[in-house]
Amino acid sequence: MFKILSIDPGKFKCGLVLADISEKKVYKAIILKSELLEDYVRNLSEVEDISKIIIGNGTTSREIRGKLDFFKKEIIIFEEKNTTYRAKERYFELFPISGLKFLIPREVFLLNKNLDAISALIILEDYCEMKLILNKNIDFKTWLK
Image (cartoon, rainbow, N blue to C red):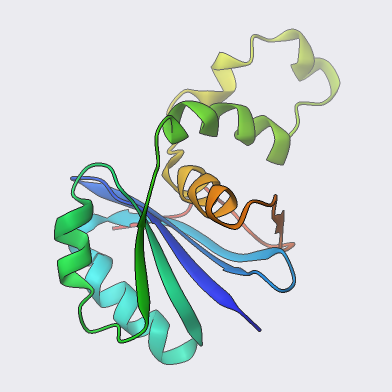
């Protein structure tokens, strides 16, 4: 297993995705307050064999990189240009509209959606140069307060 943790950093919240690259599968996808990131990653790295962490180079990436100094494996800062915009399209690839909902404008389905975890997924997919599939019970809308 070759697990990578991807982080879409933000001032107030971060999106995280844990994927097994050898299986091309996402196992965890969450959004959490930025202040909880260090403890969450520390706890996650104790139960998961994470080989590296990829952090988007946007907002607060340097601060987050500094908070993760305890992680003794590779940490990479990677380009995240337009990931939030691209997350809107990827959302509909992951969660296609079906039935009569197809008649409603797509933007309605994105209202009040936190797309940070999908942005983290896009960062990871760009880094690995491959599309990943979701494990069955993934909910990108999870929010840890």
